[in-house]
Image (cartoon, rainbow, N blue to C red; front, side, top):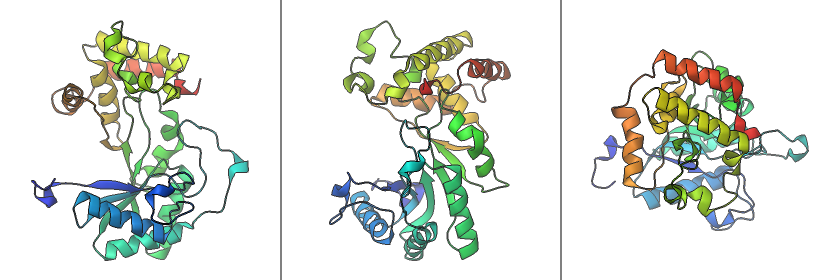
Length: 285
C-alpha cells in the first residue's frame, strides 16, 4: 500500500462486535464491546498495522447487542442482553472522525432494527450516519436482506449501501464442490475444515448450486460470472466483496466486473428468478 498514493486507495476495516472469546484483540479486556474505549483501541491498532493515519470506512463487524449470527437465522428472545446504546457508539465514532482518523462508518451483519436505530440516533443527535452495511448476499442467501433490508436501505429511506460478502457462498457457487475432479476441491476450505460454513453444504444448498451451475452453462457463462454478476447488478449493491486463494481465482473474480457480460441479460435473470422460487435460501434446509 505504501507504494501507492494514499488518496488513490479506499481503505476499509472493522472493529469487533461483542465477544467473550476475542479478548486477545484488546490489551486488557474480559469481554470485547463496541464502546468508546474498545473502538478507540481498535482504531489505533488498525492504523498502526496498516501504516496509515486514517481509515476511509470503519465498520462494526457485528453488533454489540445479541443478534443471530453466522448461520443462526432466527432471533432467540431469551438471548437478549444489555448493550451499548446506539448513541454512545456513534459518539465514539464522532470523536475519531473529528480527529481525522476515520472518514465514514458502517455496520456489518446487521439487522433492519439496527440500521434504523443507528440512522435515527444520528439524525436526532446530529451524529455521523452509517453509510454502508456489509452483509452476506448471494444466489443462495437472499431472503434475509431482500425481505426488509432492501426497503430500509433504499436511497429514499435510510440510504445505506450494501457491501455484499460471500457472493460465491464461501466458494460453493463456483461449482468446485460438485466437480467430478477431486483435485479441484480437496484443498478448499470447506473440505480442509469440516463443519466450516456448514450451511452451504446442506443437501438443498448443494441441489440449488448444481442448478445454478447448469443455468450458467446454458447461457454461456461460468458459474462465477453468474453468481458475481447477479450480486453486482442488484440495484441496492454498492460494492461486492470478493475473496481468492490463488491468482487464477482472483483473475476470474475480477473478470466478472471487467470483461464478463454486463448487465446480465433479462433471460438470465428470468431463469434465476425461476430457480429462486424453487430454492428460497436453501442454506436453511
